[in-house]
Image (cartoon, rainbow, N blue to C red):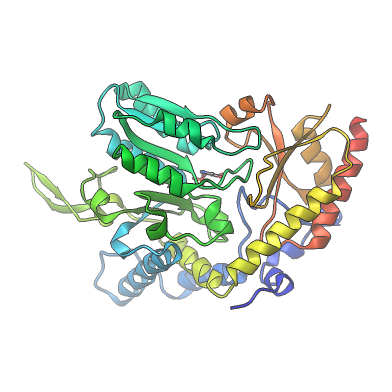
Length: 405
Ligand SMILES: Cc1ncc(COP(=O)(O)O)c(C=O)c1O
């Protein structure tokens, strides 16, 4: 295991391209990360050499593909340190994973039951719970966010009560980068016997995750933010939780027996994987995990932090800059506004210099409102970014700011 960002970078073919006549500076990995050669090759290899539908066939290609698909489940298990592959449900992304939990758990909730979310959730961890508010009369309680961009956990603890059934919170904010104090979150939920879902979309890319140590009931993330393909995600669920949950979708491969009168369901995880799954994407995801296992993740995280700190330092004197999210030990996510400038304009000007950042609400409208802004720009650093790229971003943002002076 090692970490050398120059070697790592060389494994991402797209990073050597130019944009608008300038070298690409890709600072949008929190939205979707680029893919290493190992992932690209694994997917191409599967299509060229061993591809068929999974779990159904008796022929060689079907068996080989099923083995590769299930190897990805074992890779996901290792990634989050789950106790068993049966606790790993494949989905098409974090959004589907949360919808699955909300739809299934929602069947057991009654009007007046309470679900705790926060002001800084991504819409993926808000709308499925809002569905339950609309459809079942459950009550949503919102953990407020501090001025530094973290969850206010004193307020969280005050929200917990006998009607609290689910606590669904982000592990790392996609806007402020704040890392949640999960020990306190889980301890509070246990006191009222509520289940805990952690949205790990951002944390999974920046820090090691151990679901046993976290002791959460559910942990969700998407492959595409972890250097794997789109259209694929993981729901980790504790075995006893999954066992008591009704299926989310019906179709092939999720059943026990089917007759004209009745049906029975397969055990988890297959109970939750109706229909032909994203096979190639699973194989690509498995390759991404295997590739990450060759990387020193602690060194990668330190590198990302150093890039973040370097950019913040370079922007210290920039008039009108406001950084959203100033907690220590945050993820390498730099969301900001520039006085007098719309975030979309900032992003477009940066693009002229080859610098790719995200701009908008980041699917976190309540948080934008909390900070009193309509949108913000976001530069997110990944393990393949370089100090020179952090400097190029700082330089481009200084130049962009002169357009609005
Ligand atoms: C914190 C967080 N949660 C959930 C999501 C939704 O992920 P996906 O669109 O891959 O389902 C994202 C994506 O940006 C995210 O950053």
